[in-house]
Length: 317
Image (tube, rainbow, N blue to C red; front, side, top):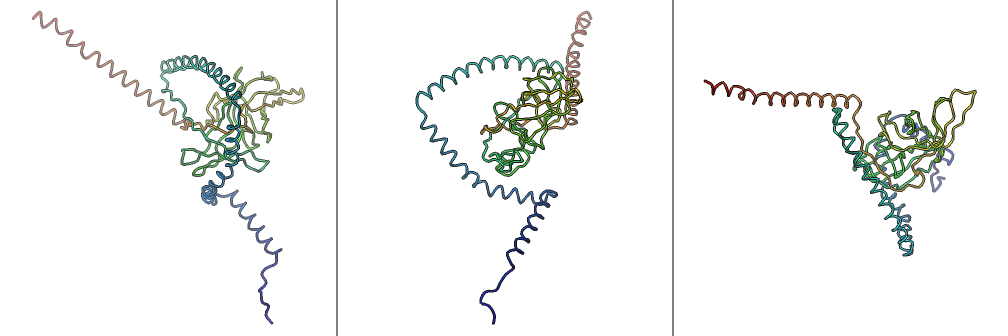
């Protein structure tokens, strides 16, 4: 007699099939580029869910602002006014220094300076994996974001874009164990490599000589040597320097200047993405063009002088 309901595979077999399928998908995703378009489309589909998940935070922020007392708002307003005055004073000095720098670069036949463009983005998600330091922002390919784009907050560099989707992007933070950045000591220009430790409050400098001139409190800025991060942005502050006479290198630990765990609004920097060869070629072409213009100007000044020299001769005749 046939049973009323046909029996399918057992739960153990189905679990084994799904486990093998999951392992195959993970290997394919890690080794090949096949699933990247699918992941990008999934990111597009999941964008509304990210937005919905962020609604409670937005609602809480709005409610908090509404509940704030008038006295707190007045005190904050006065504080902001004082800070604005200080920033205006600094801006006046920076404007003078910028103009002086432009004039010096023009004297050195350098390329014209262009201010770096920035795009304001907002953090909308954090990677739940405790062993990776990645965040999700609300800017993507449609906004002009590109792979490797530097990301910073109001205090310093935070990381770089490692994955792009149509309307969102993933950012790898400086403290991730797979991230490194070339830096230099702002006090004396000593160069080093800062690597992530997996701790959001710590970076380490690799292969710093035990006799190197570096001490606690030194500011580390991006050196621009890797052609990825623009030079001069704050990266970290040296917190501890350990010297061991038996080791050739010192142990240097630093604290990131950026608020990696607290910043919500970020800046994406659109710096010069040309390769060193392209920049050298463009500089050479600009120099040749300037030389041609100077030669033409000299020839143009000499041409009208010739008739002036012949004029007295015609009068004497």
